[in-house]
Length: 152
Ligand code: 5GP
Ligand code: ZN
Image (tube, rainbow, N blue to C red):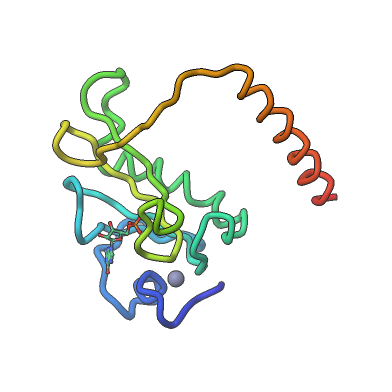
């Protein structure tokens, strides 16, 4: 397991800093956020130190979403199966510009019970431009081919 002596979340995993722990597995640790945006704002982290998502091995990432799902049961966020009413957001920030403060990958599970609490999103959607999207798609397919070939 990669660990950083100076990382606050690595210290929490090791028990050097206290936390309000919820689910823990061999690869994942979850706990209450101490500055919640809504009641029962939870953080879910890999037991592997890496700042951004692409730094984390797949086996750790594979373990995380099932834990997030289990937490939706624990937090009773799974009782509403309609689009309206209570919901929740799963958020994972990478880099300062993307609002990341702690440089150890973490997934926020944030209850969204009303307009005032929880995640408030800015969403600067652009007009649909099929020509631009088509061009981008062609170049990304080439990148994708390269990435797939590199894997072999
Ligand atoms: P970020 O902005 O990096 O995505 O979110 C970092 C989160 O970690 C923030 O919501 C902040 O409240 C939380 N946080 C920072 N330090 C601690 C800590 O020592 N303990 C806990 N439980 N949460 C922390
Ligand atoms: Zn760490």
